[in-house]
Image 1 (spheres, rainbow, N blue to C red):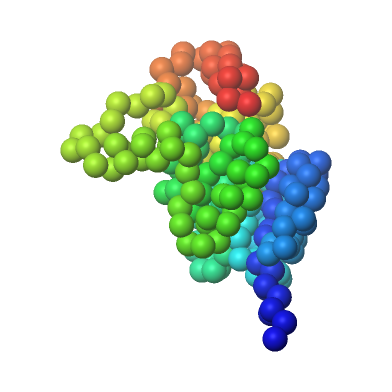
Image 2: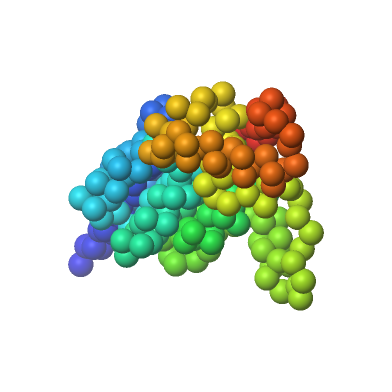
Length: 221
């Protein structure tokens, strides 16, 4: 009897850069067991696309055109979608990976990884396993087994997810009005976040906040 063809598992790509979406979709398209079922660049469009196409896995960037990938993960989990989530980001693992796993992602990989590694990560998460680099795996094991919290590698770990998102957007050169529009917040709420960030990072004024945020974005992609 002829072999039964494998059913192709559906992959959704959620990223705010069209060129990156096209490149990843092209790479996935050559795999016999995977197919791209949809693309999106923001939280609203991602939620609509996932509800319509019901992908097996969503490859999610941290930075989106509207909102953040971390917030999207939480919404997908709260909506009880069966879609598994792999975060694929320009940002290193040191800060965002832990946040992504806490939100409900099953994997984290950086965009400088080889394309074959990205496919490996997708299949790993599709099979119900957690994907992380050996270095990140060791960090998570140490953090979860030590009796006292590990020393923070960055004062930014003091920031909440929303505060970190505001901090990143400040570093990208966005104004308070821009941030409010992107995150769908009021300008007053954004100013409150800015004040909290300054307090947590011991920054005296807006100029120091802007310099610190800009430097962090330059160092982290």
